[in-house]
Length: 344
Ligand code: SAH
Ligand code: SF4
Image (tube, rainbow, N blue to C red; front, side):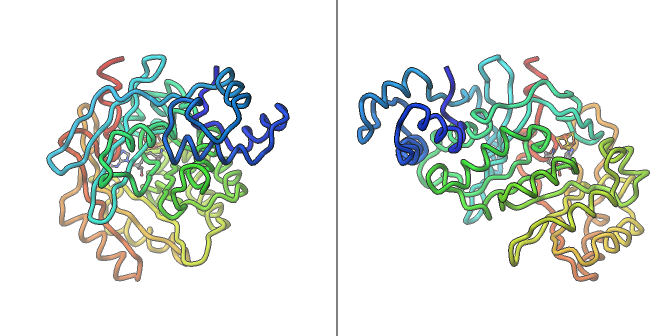
């Protein structure tokens, strides 16, 4: 049996045609699942009994199981999911004034092995299915009281989204579809380390969620060392691909830059970064490195971070320092995987 959660609208339409059913039933089914949250096909009362029976034979409706919830002193909440094969993944719910963001995972582990990232130390255990990908949002939203429901999604949890291409693209289409999850595309951000071949494929999908790119260095020699994917797709190649990114009016690419003490945090780096990004409609998100056990990286001083930001601002860039959230529960950027490690 197949989980209907995450099953794409296009595939469902195809299946209904095969079954000799009218395609408008697809929207009714999606509405029952994603808007009304039914967990049983028998509850879909405006659908014929015979179609309900076919659906029931072919599909089930299943969400990933929340195994543990850990709440930080700043309100950030980490959800540990236990998947059907006992793999563990994490999502992080981050409350802020006016928005509640869910950071979701795309893989168990990650094969890209960035040296500063805890998820990278796991290696790739496996890709998530589209059901597990969108299921994180569904499961957390159902567990939250009305006033805390998710308003924004960032695909910045465990894994490299473009390395799990099809399930992520199927999931994104469901997220933005008004018939399904109906999250506005401006409220979704996909973060990638820069898999250029997949990025180019993604640019042709006509999906207009926000794009964030983990640049993290201004010279290939440094980026090669901290993000091995750079050996395949060096900075220049990545930026050339991004220059062609189909941006809607008034939208910008976000460049993420994790500041690592003595590695990429000097004034010369700030100068090079300003030069590299010249002419890009972009925002820069500076992230002071978040620590975890056994890692050979350090966070720069607050002063270094502020100097770096101020230089970029002086060059007319929009540059933010990302507020660390949920550090006390290992819920901040790059800290996800601890629980996965603990149980594996
Ligand atoms: N694989 C994707 C998305 C997951 S990582 C990517 O690399 O973009 C999400 C963000 O966390 C990336 O910008 C990454 O550079 C950052 N990150 C990883 N480890 C970190 C750490 N220890 N401290 C701060 N940020 C980190
Ligand atoms: Fe993977 Fe992103 Fe971590 Fe790099 S930073 S190892 S791409 S999850």
